[in-house]
Image (cartoon, rainbow over all chains, first blue to last red):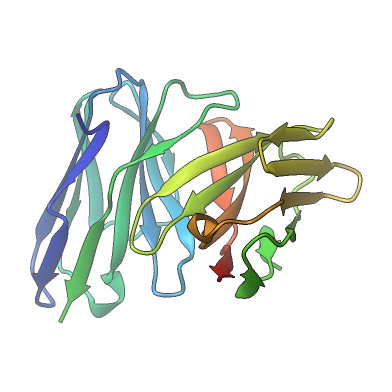
Amino acid sequence: DTAVSQTPKYLVTQMGNDKSIKCEQNLGHDTMYWYKQDSKKFLKIMFSYNNKELIINETVPNRFSPKSPDKAHLNLHINSLELGDSAVYFCASSPRLAGASEQYFGPGTRLTVT
Amino acid sequence: RKEVEQDPGPFNVPEGATVAFNCTYSNSASQSFFWYRQDCRKEPKLLMSVYSSGNEDGRFTAQLNRASQYISLLIRDSKLSDSATYLCVVAKLTGGGNKLTFGTGTQLKVEL
C-alpha cells in the first residue's frame, strides 16, 4: 500500500513537448506539494495545495501548471518542455498546512528532456 | 547566501564510528527544524525533528541552537545502512502554510 504514488516513474521526452505527471496520496492528508530536485541534488519547493486550493506558488515558469481535482490528487502539467526541466520531480503530502508536521514523499518522477 | 547550508561531504567513516553533521540557516524566523534522509535514487524520508532542548532517537541525536542558527546531527556507532545523504530542513509558517527549505545535503558513506 503505497502512501504517496507518482506516475510515471521515468519520463524521457523531447524539447517542446507537453507532458503530465500524476500524484496520488492515500493518507487522507489535506496538503500536497510538488518539489524539483536538480542534478546538484538541490530540492526546491514548486507548489503546495491545501484542500484543492493553491497555497504556495514559488517562482516557477508558467509552463508548469499544477491541478488538484480532489485533495488526494495533485497533478503537474508541463508545457513546451526545455532541457533545463530535466530533474527528478517529487510529490509530497502532509497532514495539515501548518505546524511541524512531517512531509511524506512519493518515489519521484525522473524527467529527461532531450 | 543559501538559506540552509551544509557541508556536502562525502564523509567516509568506518563502521562503528561517531560522525557529526552541521547545518546553518539564515532565516531567523524559521520555526521548525528537521533532518531528512535520502538514499541514492530514492525519496527523502523524515529521520527526526529537531527541538531546542535537543532530542535523541536511538543512535541519533539532534541539537538546535537558535541563537547561532545552527543545527547538528550526531550518529553514534554508525552502520553500513546509515550510508545516505542527510538533508537539513527548516520550516517557516508563511501566509501559504508551512514552507520547508532543504539544504543540499551531506553525503555519508560508512565503510567496513
